[in-house]
Amino acid sequence: MSVPEPVRLFFALWPEAELQQALYEAGNKLYQRCGGRRTRRENIHLTLAFLGAVDADQMQCITDVADQIALTAFDILFNRLGWWRRNQVAWAAADETPRPLIDLVKQLQLGLSAEGFKFDERRFQAHVTLLRKANCPQVLIDSPPIVWQARDFVLVRSTLQEDGPHYAIVQRWPLQPTAD
Ligand code: ATP
Ligand code: MG
Image (cartoon, rainbow, N blue to C red; front, side, top):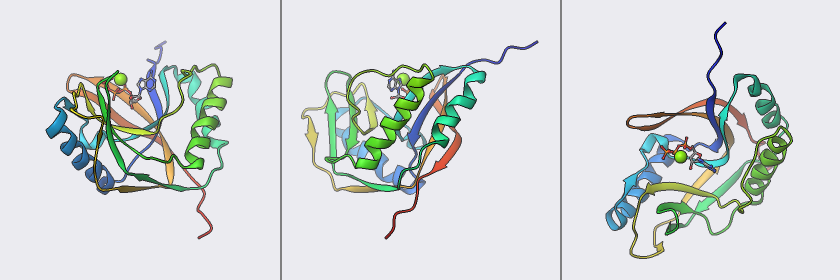
């Protein structure tokens, strides 16, 4: 009998191609100042909850947790580009994290914790990683705002290959339309 390999999974917001492009261009701007390694355009995303290696028999309880979520869609205004010295990551982020985004992360973490998944205690900081191993001359960089209209969230499978991680969307869950 063959034993299925564990898969590396995470929940994320996944931008449309146009938004990925806009964030990639912001990443290029950072790259000119900070160097490092750019996130590939098609890999650009916002991580909600990282699960790590998961056995095939855990899939059902993971998708059950996501099935329970009933939150409204929201917009995020990415109006900051910056750099964390501690992990050499340069990123795009929002001054204000929308309430439904905080709730989405909280509900995923609560539901998944009940299934035995562990999350670190650090406060969730919504960000899109644009550079790794970057060394920026300043911590914040001006940039025109980018609006992300989040209408769904996804479960993603990551495979680490020679040329870096490859991501594939496993399943998508819609957020509820807003009244207006
Ligand atoms: P690489 O590890 O090759 O640099 P990556 O970090 O983009 O690539 P993964 O390690 O598969 O790819 O991670 C997928 C997503 O989950 C990324 O957004 C990553 O930042 C995030 N992530 C990875 N490990 C953790 C962790 N321990 N805690 C929180 N988020 C994580
Ligand atoms: Mg990683």
